[in-house]
Image (cartoon, rainbow, N blue to C red; front, side, top):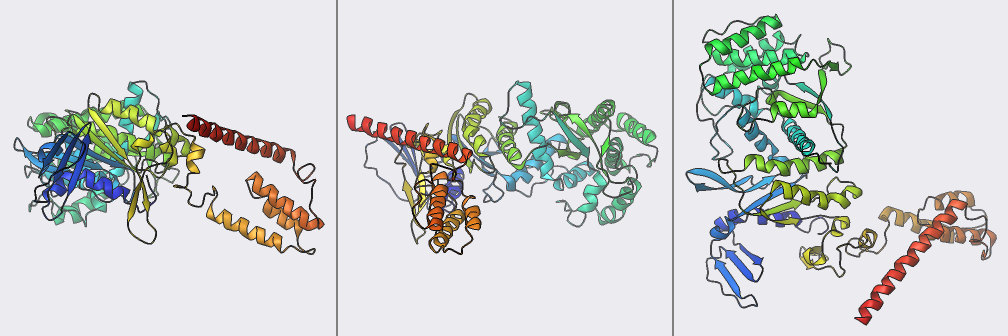
Length: 578
């Protein structure tokens, strides 16, 4: 917990990437893990360390590999400006590359999206670096590579969100945020994807599969050919199917384009069944037929965005049950999907705060989707979850409920695992769910870059949120008002002190009535009355200077102050007796 610039995110970064830093001999690193009565000290200092302390058992490891590799480190944040922590740390394990830690944030979402879409097209990549390549240089692989490289990762995030909602509905669980049952979707024209990105398309193999001729001539021709029908949802999918087949099999007897949509679809379907040999490509295209026919059979009524049909901005979409689309495209643990990479979710009907909370939870749940014995990431029995700025974008009421909701999700996602959570926050609301013993306060020292590490003077767990807000750690000058409001009140006091008989008393009263705190407001009104009448107004709090609502608010405010004072007196008396 700490103000901006105290190094909270940097600290989480080093903890997440600890195995990486230990491997860098020029980056001196030391970490201490405290487990019950044992200490685990790991370092790369290149010297022998000794320990003189109270713990009965101390383990000192000069490289940390054995201990660190037993703990899965998972970093998660919603921040748009999160420092780009490496997605993975890898080590050889059974001749496979295995991840030792993962980071999930907005900047890394693109990489996660590619891995997800790879799976949907039965597309094999070597996970050896960010410049990963398909194992086989085929036309099918070349096309899928280029399409996936140029997809919008926001659509992938929407898929994660839909999946999270679907799982909630399946388990008949409520969600802290808005419940979304119906979503608006459309599908992206493959020619548009390639045309918009044609100047930036790269392919790691130097072949003619992705050629200048295809990008500069064939794509524009196909795009123009399908322009009239591309607003129609079924037409987009059928034309996309034709394009993929034509790209892969134009040299193997695939027929020419037909403007008749029914004929075009029948032609594609027949070629898939009769001409494509059994294997992953045939499986993929057969799945395409199944998915397209499912969409056709939904008999949904199309809508549009209100633009004229001959306008380039015209777009057709339809509303669909969120569970239906989830079942259609998110069943593919061992199956492929044609339409998922073309799916565009237009609206979830949420505010930015609701989306932020949903994004956070859906990313957390997604960790299980790429972990397992046969996947690139394997969850260990011991898991360290590192959550950065958990209060980001979230309304105070949701902050109050956040930790409870988070623990529920963690218990489901990591059932049977040993989990420790480290989180950072700016919010005193979060503190009310955490014991003082589990909180570290970080504070900047004046005129230096040094950071003080503090412990709270008060028990925070179950503490009144308003009391926590007034703590000097959060409000430096002890005033629970904004700096601009304080300057406004200071200026108002000076104007009252200079008040003369010719002053505009009505205007001053209007300025005073803007103030919300009843004590400050009524003290200033009293001062105004005294200046106006030239003597102390003893009747100020007794008569018409306070309206009925003001009087009620004043009484309520003072009663709360009395209750708080009595509570603090009781605590002091109890401590004195103890």
